[in-house]
Image (cartoon, rainbow over all chains, first blue to last red; front, side, top):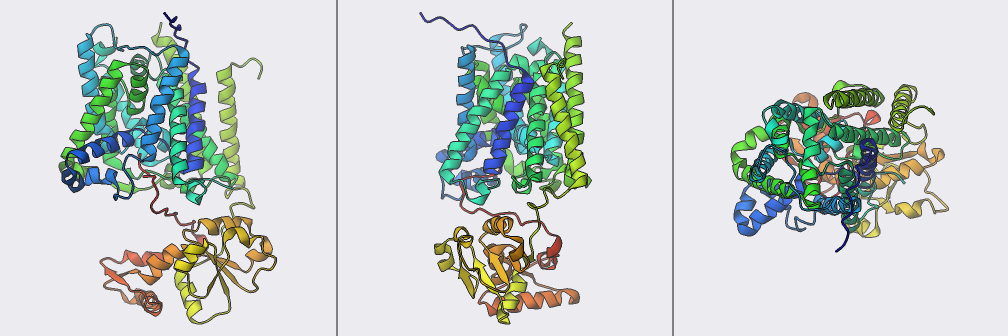
Length: 175
Length: 194
Length: 200
């Protein structure tokens, strides 16, 4: 039986931040754009809807925006490839540090099933937030933050505010 | 040779997708390195126990911002050619608040939920499924939401334009604020972990 | 610096970079002198007028051969960007450069020696604006008296070159023609048919 590697400690967050900042800067220099995550997920949803009912997808202005004009397959998109990279990168880092294993992260006071419920609900709520704001922490907060975009900073401040205000209510989930 | 390379036509479409993959790999790698693939660490931010999220995010912002400023000054990067998402004041404020709520309830953000899923977190996977469902719901409800979605537009605008200052001033302000906040974070962590 | 921890050293570096950046933004706000100079712009309307009046000048198309053959500004000659600097003899007189989306024009301008800059111009907006703003412009359906001169010149030139105007509501379409090109930023580049959807 292969020996399970002991989980290594996390790196200095400031160093990781500098690394991430350099990656972001690289994207600016090479592509003239920043990174993102929610856009890729939306593309996947739009393509799925379109495969079930093309008419419905085309008629909806929201999906249509992610399906393009038909010249290029909507999944052949910069963000989609980037998010695939994120999956790979996360896996690699976890493997090297011995942190890859099937796990359920939660506070000690709730059950696994409740955790799943809240993870799901949290995802649904977050999706509304991310689409309204046209981005998530990667696209708006990181990218827009570095570019001093007004909307991005508004989003970033609001997101911290919203989470801190809600933290007391959901304390039982985590502590 | 100056950036952005893609806008000058020096990077082909296929090459840009390869670059996307590489960028993503590095992004995911650093996220996991700092521990942001863990819901416990992410949520600890909001109880002042572990402010890694803030430190990591703002260090990245400051690094990239300084990089853009200096490269632009040296003429090596034309910063005004970098894509800016348009600003819609109220949708982004409300969207931010809602996002924050979803963040603390679910324990992840879209990027970190991907990292969590790929390192084996089942709750991360459920969060991703929740995200897809939410986006689908949003899409279906879009005709009713469209009005609010496009409210209060300001266009593509930076804080430099809005406050009408020289970029150097804004950069200095943000860096100073960030450094002060980092110092405060260290103090808060010690205090709340006693 | 010896007694500071790693984090403190990083913070010091960041602060120094930001502080020096602050100083430099007052000392030399436009960046390194030689690199960020604004070029001499000429609008498509002004150019169209000069060509019509057969003024003495040489228009240079910097794009690839296929694009030049597909369409070029009348009386322009084709010198692709890469071969421009390898040429032994540069045309005399006033030089007017253009490209599809100003990208080649931008590159050219940064490499152009000062001796040539004195007699060179860049067409603001390149072929893109020639199409969208001269050949097939959007013009207001109703014009006030003060705008009628602009309206007439754009409309007449459009017809002269075989184009056609489209009439729309509102007056702000004329903003473009009124802008002062001595103090303007490079236009945003439009890269058509790219894979990259720019949102996030």
